[in-house]
Image 1 (cartoon, one colour):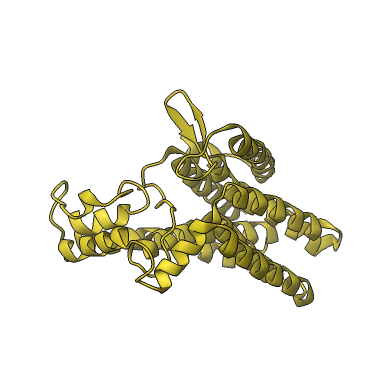
Image 2 (spheres, helix red, strand yellow):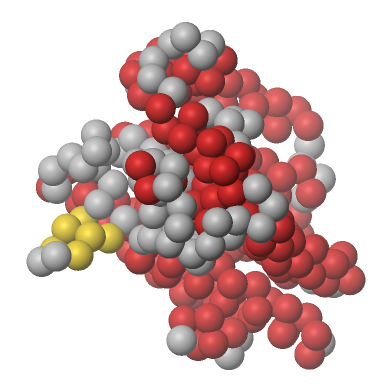
Length: 301
């Protein structure tokens, strides 16, 4: 319903909704940080009745569209739009680090930097931003214990407990090429967070490597289609939005799967449309809805 509803909107309404969602997410993220108790060592969720919601998930699609708007304005008018963009990035990053959600911060910053590079912003403006990012990264590494632990645990196997990643890798080994069958997995059943962060390990064991690769292919079809259409467009806003939204979608997929395969340090990031989690499901639906809207506008042009 979310995807279909958003896909029927105009570009003007897309921008309006993005500003609304961004503002709402900022306010609710502050509420989560200061007025709700910690859950698993983080203040990311707003709890009501038996439900919980992670407002920072709404930052992903909304910030990318707003950034595309501001980059387009800066490119055409050479005003202060880019510095407003940087301010919104700092605001978003500060909230994510305060929660803390270091992985989401890295994800949004990486996609934003790619948007900036594709906009041909002067390199003398970009370099101080990258230096600032390195400084923030080091600050988080030394001040956030869980960030330091996960990085050190990835780099040095003798640091900490490798139970989760060992179980994850064993799941792929046990599943082989065609898997054990739905509900027949034994290793993954003893894997913490298998329903969310390590869902790909469950897929590997019960459905096998073939089905896991098929799922990965489906994600890349969405990404490649968006990229191909963006290359045909002459509308800077459409191009920047399409590339940014498709990048944030596929990067999340890559981060989740890479964590399961011990290619990168473990990160609590969901696999779009497959992992358990309503907030992530809504966010992913908004991203695809935005992509459908932009693709429809471009094909109708």
